[in-house]
Length: 99
Image 1 (cartoon, rainbow, N blue to C red):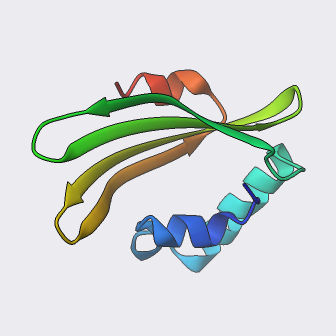
Image 2: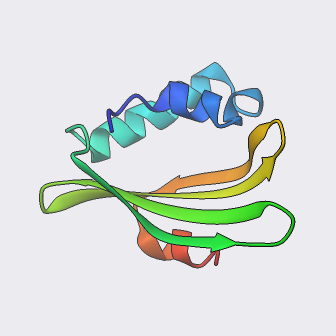
């Protein structure tokens, strides 16, 4: 719910593919769009696929504006959940088109 994006991206597995400079630039862009911490989060859509795979979309927002949308492709295994792909975007369409 806080706008602490860098640990989120690293925890979801994006830290290996993105440089520290790119992460800082990403954080600056999101801080410009979202000036307050998020007050609400809801799952928009969750789809259970075969063999432990799932898709999930969430919306985060504060007040009447400032929506951030999240998508993840997950794999639930005996040793935990693996995030195979994730996307953060300011538009719902770019997230919902993944379903």
